[in-house]
Length: 291
Image (cartoon, rainbow, N blue to C red; front, side, top):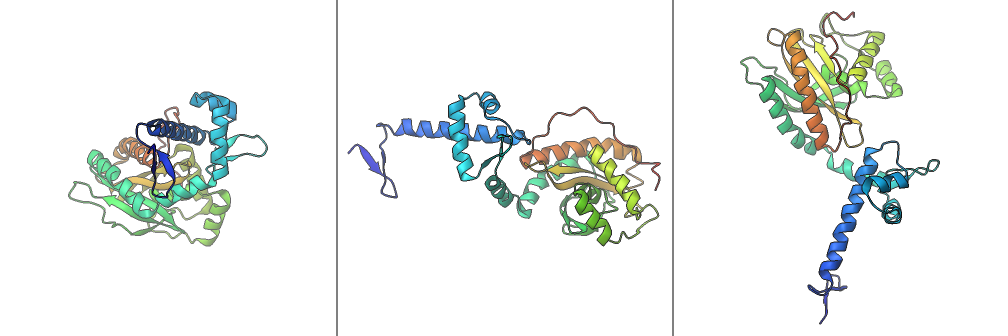
């Protein structure tokens, strides 16, 4: 016999009689398809066919046929007006299925452990839950005195660094509904309770991609947090470190902010996000802000 039968009864080439060639061609097509997907994902405003072919080093006709197949399957979409290509809904559905809470925790935990090792402070990863945030993963620092938050604890968003990062990512409409429906409780003399002051604070968070809590939720604690992004570029959560004010001075907080940023980059990369190179940013001042 020159052919073997597959499990479905379909005839497939036998080893040594075309099977290797077919397998090789299949692997090459899959490799090319993923290269195309990755390049399209890097261009959030879409990319034209000619430019896409150039980026992946394929002939226009080869790129077109692969893209056409992925468009028909829903993994790529073509914008009606510009004819440029973007990632399709089906790929989002697949990715969303992988990014459930358990997966987020499993990816975040080693990053938090490394962050704690570098800073000596308690590290947290949180996601938004309505008007509040939920700490879904944490690691304790090595010091004698540590923050006592446990995994699963719910905290207000308006007065925590983690929360500010998460609500700063809301659309203007979502933020408007948040402010209108959420009573901003005062926990300490430093807690922000005025909507206009919170709006200015969140503008600063968006500009600098970092948030601080200088005794706003707990008068004896300070925290710094940075957004974590998924493969779409959207904020999937927030990562930060916290500690008592007598150990975590304003200067120490600023110094640890760089390590928190690096941890956020690492975790974002695990979620499929590749940050574009940006010019170095000066850290905003923590102290002296008018409330």
